[in-house]
Length: 201
Image (tube, rainbow, N blue to C red; front, side, top):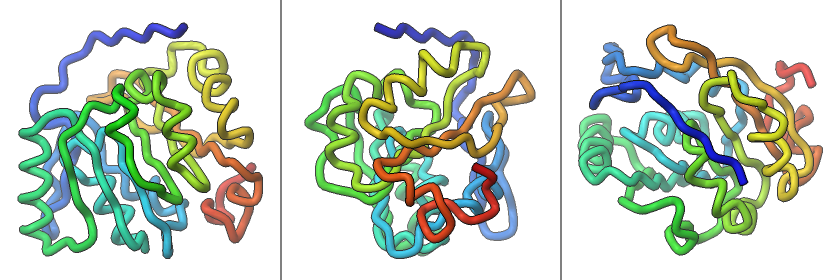
């Protein structure tokens, strides 16, 4: 059993949000450059812990045909919906839900995003695997923990193939996170699959 604890304050501005040509900074930096290595074209996406929905919208602008986001905080869900309306974003929806409850995760998706929510999806990994056809994109918390035992081994039981993609910021320069793609089949990690050919396996 893995127990992860964190001691940092993010405030109410967790995700960086892009509005028109302006970027409104949050605790976590913009993830658009990272998302350029993923091929969402024609894929359906579940965004676990979607926060203000910025990653959901990034997936949609990069070709996802449908994105559903689940967020525990009702206030964040309302803000995410307002940003969708402001940006005229279509086929991206958000709902309030508790990720630690397997019944919250419904439907079937090609790709599941789990950015900085690993402690919440860990108890329901079998359900995440059941509802994800191709790949799980997971961002760790601070990489000070043992990545292999904390993140890779539990997920590899359900998604046997994985690759490291890049480091991202923990927030405000306080450390680093790591982003992995876990796949059910190796072809998802190869050129022509979910990852762009720029990623060095």
